[in-house]
Amino acid sequence: MAINPIDQEKCIACSICVISCPCDIIRCDKETKKAQAVYPEDCMCCAACEDDCPVGAIYVSPEKNDPLMVSFR
Image (cartoon, rainbow, N blue to C red; front, top):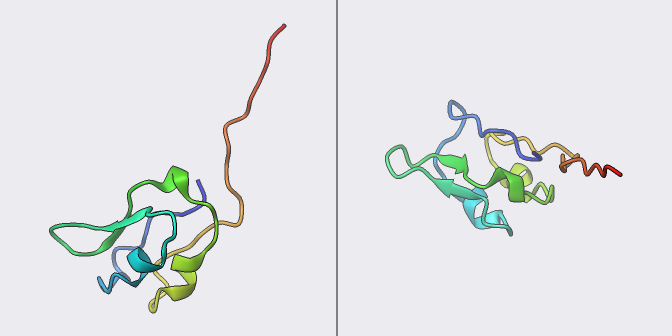
């Protein structure tokens, strides 16, 4: 997974990351209004959300972990 869970203590519910994410991975929680990565497996590692977050609540790993394909003969 490329995007780590968003730090809820740092998040200020500004929604900038929701707007900046081109893959529509981040959504705001209905109750807390804070950002959550709802589809982290779809993250393309662009780090737009990390770059735009004003409080540093988001970290995107530069590596995307894809499932390992194994074939048996």
